[in-house]
Amino acid sequence: MSYLKSVNKLPKEIDSDKKSISYLLWGICIIAATVGLFTANSFETFLGCLIWPLLFSLLWRPGEPPVLLFAATFQSVQVFIPVIIADLAGESLQQSLQVQSDISSAFYLGIIAILVLACGMYLGSSKLTKYSGYFQAKMNESGSELNVYRLALSYTVILIFSLAINSIAFSESGLTQLLLAVSSLRWFAVFLIAWSGFRYRQFRILVICVTILEILIGITGFFSGFKTVLFVMLVVYGGTSTKISRLFRPQILILLALILILTTYWQGVKSDYRSYVNLGSRTQTVQVSLFERLSYHGEAISKLDVEEIKNGFDSGLERLGYLKFFGGSIKTVPSIIPHQNGKLWSEAFANLAPRFLFPNKPIIDDSIRTNIFTGFRVAGAAQGASVSIGYVGESYIDFGVPLMFLPVFGLGYFWGWLYQFLTRTGAYPLLGMAAATTLLLNSAIYFESSNLKLVGGATSAALVYVVFLYFGSNLVWSWLIGKSQKSN
Image (cartoon, one colour):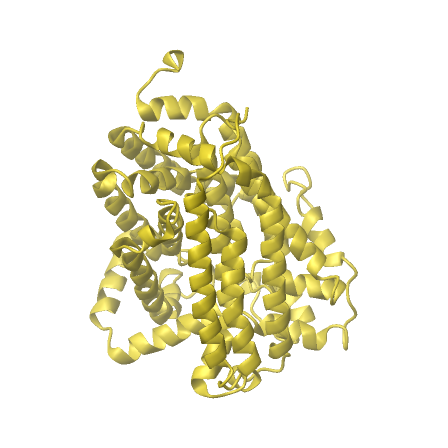
């Protein structure tokens, strides 16, 4: 049952605050865009600077964790970063990347695609706009009821449960997506801890401990899992005030600094660390003990010097940008390989069929598509890697310009619809927002995400979250606030 029972619009002064910040952002970005006209990639820089105020105007909702805005903005950064790198080097975009692909066209189509995606997100989530005041009141009321000790215990239990499920998820290929979706319920607890910690003093130690623990778990894994907790914290912090000016506090600088420092360090050690933990097997597995992994990082940190930090920072920027394979697909399709007329998106929807019912369903290997459609040769599943073109590139391969923007818009609408649907599901809006934030941060923020994994992963997660919100939220919430269900 939805908790939305009445309409309560935001006060006019809050809407006025958004307009004031929007005007300020437009002014800053127009100045930056004007300066960009004097760079090596003048029009690319100009256009890249102007997309951010558009995204802000479309997707910022005062008092709500801005997860839709974060998803669209993060992808726009991935598209724009190659231009910035080229500008700093005084080179054209094509010269900077030094690859046989149409990078310039990939940039323009990528920027347009992000804007189309954001429009879809806006329309898909537009039903929430008229309920904003009521929504925020219910969120704050619910958050004030949480018990710090019970929340800490819940997080501990679900963390152990989540790590146990993760350890078997990929060995049970027929249930992998479902198991990963169940495992991701752990981020509900992290969301609640962050929400409370940014508001109430008694939760602050818990927030710090959880953040440190999740960073350690992430950095001692095979992938850069430490980013997830920082992204959750950043998005939750964005919903702590209806007035944007009040968000400019030390917390935001600390979170951004942590993301920058840890990403720089990770990019510097990633290759050697992965070879160490998988014992040179070229698989995405961890085969050494936790103590050995911690010792490795301790030794690596002690040996860091300025040159390694610089290399890690440069590598991080290059990794964040993601136009190479999209540009390769533009050069290959349709001049060498024809457009696929929807084949790639059809495969994505066919992939929804559960493997335990259809055991002969093909194994997902994004690298196969990349090797076929981009002109590049990349490592695949046999080498412990998975390299994707990205859903925008796959849309181009299927339909070309301009029809490629239809599935991009549809995906944006789907993200927006899921956001408003999950936040309106169940009796407790804070749990609904935790579900929406978790799903979008896990599924919707990367430009390189393949439609094969987007459709299946998001659908599996949404089903698990809806079941939890409908059938488990009352019991869980009653326990978290220390009340019996009968008293509710």
